[in-house]
Image 1 (cartoon, rainbow, N blue to C red):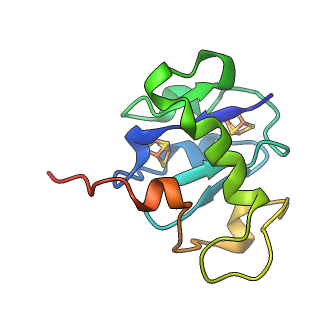
Image 2: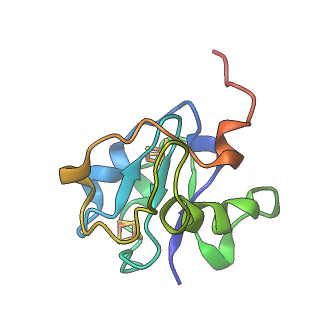
Length: 114
Ligand code: F3S
Ligand code: F3S
């Protein structure tokens, strides 16, 4: 079980959640952030920090964000565009820094304006 970042984060990327996470498991892509589901310890500290309510416990994810459960996991389980290997469990987002790429699902979302 894990927490999941959904569509409201896309093109917003406030990053307040990153400061709250005790295990540094919130990783930065190009247009969204993603929670590593094996590293997340389900503390929920990130949830109130997000100004756009993008973070949910996986069982509480609103139906319209359902795809993001598998998608957050896919960010780590599948090789990202331009990468040969999957990220897996890097063990900390700070050392990795922004990755600049997204899952196919996030990459094809219309760009948020305004
Ligand atoms: Fe995104 Fe909210 Fe974190 S907008 S970066 S999930 S604080
Ligand atoms: Fe971190 Fe949020 Fe999980 S603070 S441990 S990503 S519930």
